[in-house]
Image (cartoon, rainbow, N blue to C red; front, side, top):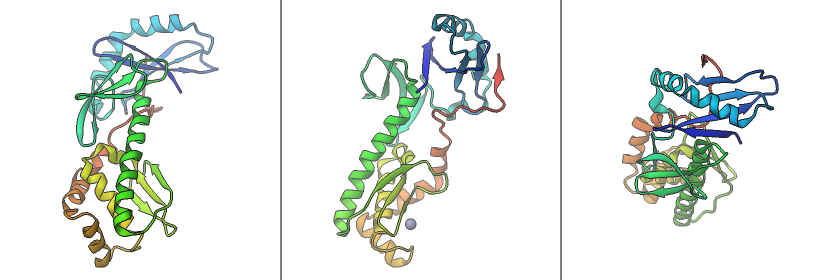
Amino acid sequence: MAASFIFGDPPIEVILRAHARARRFSLRVSQRTGVVSLSLPPWAPEQEAWRFVQAQEAWIRKAQAALPSAASCAVLGGTVLFRGRPYRLETAKVRSVALQDDCIVLPEGRQAPVRRLETFLKHSARLDLMAACTRHAARLGRPFGRVTLRDPVSRWGSCTAEGHLMFSWRLIMAPPKVLDYVAAHEVAHLAQMNHAPVFWAEVARLMPGYAEPRAWLRSHGHSLHQIQFSKLGPKHDAEN
Ligand SMILES: [Zn+2]
């Protein structure tokens, strides 16, 4: 896990990346994600890196302000959707990620806060999806196998012939009904491995009113994929 610095108001998070071949400090703001990273030689004193980053605050803010799509990146001080509601991202001296009113509070520390956010979202997605699948499978009267979370671009879930289920963890950002619908859809495949009318009748039995969340996914689902978390874009970066 990468270490990071946080400073300034609104806060800027800088991910530190030690490179064996680095000869000097090199600061970058990713054009694609807005993530700020500092490459440094492994032997560089942390104090010196810290001073270097602070001296570049104006340059960082200017580079971030010039980004074409800064809103699509999860950054401290910005917001992220959680169970369909926007939450502001903040840091504090907490042991683990916590929900406080309309904030998601991330622990201060060496590990990059935004990476901890991604772990938190995946963990919450697993809890909600397991609860939904268990409920729907009990109603259906069939057991399910392994539940795997991934980040596929083209689908929200899948069900294998062996009864193993796969879901996109990004569903945790959607309204709860939407996550519930995708769980009902995949669980219904345990009985019907097709999309015939008999399958949709099963979905309707498990979740009456599924048409609304299904329509939400069709019109808004793509927006959940536009949010970047900890990926650092290597290309087209501005270098200081
Ligand atoms: Zn299906």
